Image 1: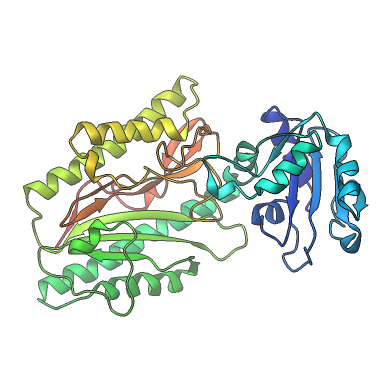
Image 2: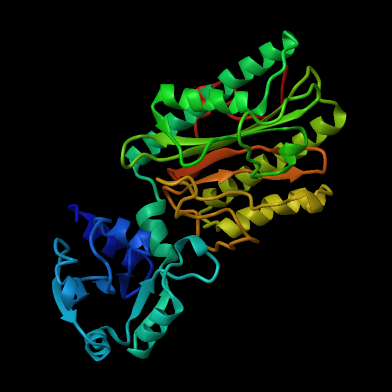
Length: 393
């Protein structure tokens, strides 16, 4: 375990008002436990191990006798067990205390503890609560280096969008046929040139395909027709181990003028995004903690009031850290309702979408909390810093 990790874990426990954080794993099913404790993924894990970190004092480990060295390198004493009776006796000293564990009724992305193990721990007298807030404090809040990594990548992604649209504009002016796959390939080539990596190819969707938020294709994709809406969604990070993702979505029109309806719809979408940003800023400005669910409801209510209730297919945003969909607060009141507050260092997307039968729009910016205020990532990358109007040819 790296220096300072234990201290930071215990600080998170105290900030959440718990007695401790109980980590456990079996067959490496809980990747967060391995990551947060810096456990090598190649170790055998054919039996459960437990590692209890109290708010103060020395941690304790509990391992099976045939994997007695599994927690070596972590601070604190280690005990071993063989039978189920041994296990229950060894858990007894932790009874009556409130332990954060990796379970959540709402947040599937941080819920790894199985129901059977929950029952065993409960029968041993442990009081179990969700560690979602702890996970956010240890993984979902960016430090200065993390924010710098995120900002560099956000600025780079804005540049990638400009490169893609220069190609689109030139193709339209030259009356050349282009395909969705052409746009995806430009983004992939730019990632390679810029030294960026990603977990999945970026999205390039035209026409009706833009109404599918997770549209994907193999091969070259569909030909882009004049008059098509084009939706781009791209995310990446630097190749360093602790690099932080950036994730943006831009929309455009394969033609000189998109028409009044498309302009109006996209304008309403942008206004909802910006009003949500102002809502967060105003609340933080008076010392109020805003939850991800509250921010989502703000954006969602504006779109519903505008008559778009039936065209909303997803939450307003997600947490961002070393993973594109990270462990921090999601801007979500309906899919995976997130009542965790936006804390200093939180990084998240604001990406409302309106999806109609013939086309759809999503406009996504990344935001982080620094100095008690929200900041749009990559804002210095270009004049406006974020999309307010549809791109056009």
